[in-house]
Length: 230
Ligand code: DX5
Ligand code: ZN
Image 1: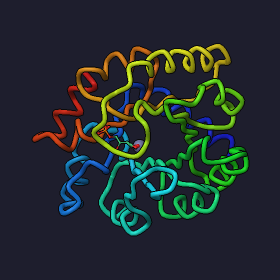
Image 2: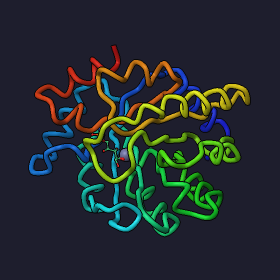
Image 3: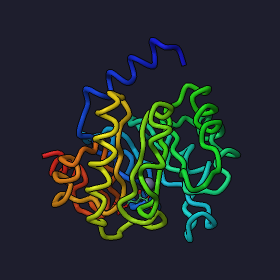
Image 4: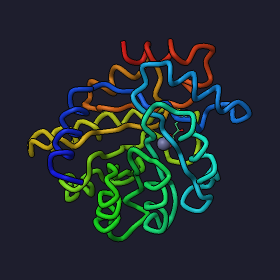
């Protein structure tokens, strides 16, 4: 990625604070094209794509064929969240499949740096992710090397879980460190987000909120996204 492109992307994203990324995991898979098309018409900034391998998390979601289908229908950038072991084996394929960003868990690797580098080498943004039981300070050495960090506000594996309130303090800690070092790194928060808690999660310092059930398990996903942005 050229320096100019890098600066442009970060500047653009920085201007667009308080963004929503609906998680397709909670959509009706029998009507995937319609579900994606509804999000296309919304103020969502991205479409969040949860990939689970049944090993890193006790659930299996989907892989490349669904990614290809989403790419075909989505006008929103695809924000891929890998909940898999050995992410280094797959990140490049997700980049080639059209991901806007590729995230993986810090717990899933001994050395995130080469993985971040191989995603960047494809011109794709990175998102270093941690579950709620991981000390957020473990992210600090990598804040310069990743475009985003993702703080899970539930344990990765399933949609529809309740937001863990302690996440707010974890967000504040990371926000403080990013601001202290004047970094453009964005903070994503994922799990149990809804219209009631979105405001306080943004206020704690999050830039991008992922929401599954609160968007797709409602009659009007477009209105649900508006309520979270209000
Ligand atoms: C959980 C996934 C989340 C999930 C969010 O492992 O990473 O993205 O789909 O769903 P809700 O918003 O329903 O908690
Ligand atoms: Zn996710």
